[in-house]
Length: 369
Image (tube, rainbow, N blue to C red; front, side, top):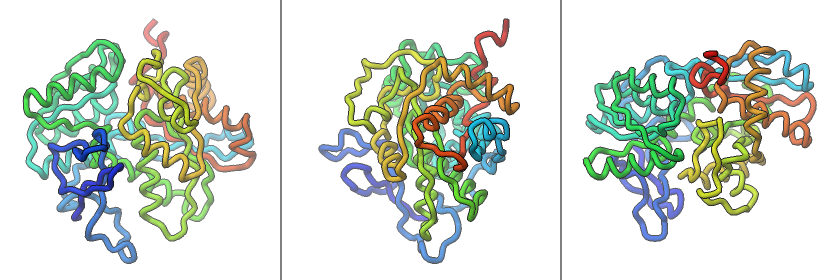
């Protein structure tokens, strides 16, 4: 389907180019792009619009169509209807496969044979897998303190792994420098508008599952916000006066740039502290304004939870529901408890919680003892 890149800030549109990741217009401060379609008839098209010249070119390793289950014990505890979407059932164990499939498919159409990416683990593993399938050489920059299981997974797919000391954002700086020095496209999952177009399949599946049954809330663990933004894009593309659930962004107390933006508070990368939820430990997310706007557009909220609460919920979720979620995913359960206590989520409402990654990717510290 024909499409353009549109700057989120100045609204300038350009022809798609895998070598251009941010807007170069003056005053945009390297703003990210989104994709807009130039030949879609919104009144007659019922297909999910995707930015490929041929839909058959979409790489499929089995991503998407993940199960949605009712969490009976927790629903009873809180007097709610709580559902979980098991995103860890994607091929590499996280929701990132939705975005990687679309991004790597688009890069393949452009004839790209080598890429650079930075990741705390899940996106790196996902992009490595889809790159391997597509015969694209990938260089993945990771924090040296990223979970060993995730780094091992990346290495297994044959990617060249670059371990970078310091906070998560240092991997981004190193990846960009390597990309520029070696003239290899910087294919960041945080910046790529193609990655975002892949994540919106989550939203379409949620809409189809709940159909006419009202879904009141969706809680997302948010680093850059690609799943939250993708979900909202699906709802807006379908239109037809469909009810859009409140989209809530959950971050940790130690790294909370989107929560601070939502609350009109200052945030500096120097304010960040270590957190066990490494999947959302992004000090300066490039889509923070877009993610915050989604929260506001849907009348959602953005809140923080503690590392201690996250650890508690990893255990509770496993013992109450038989679901083994990675620590980052458990932030939304701590967030659920907080939103219930503040009456934002009310009795008998329906809530969806995406389990974004599998527990073995980032097991409890006592796991190997």
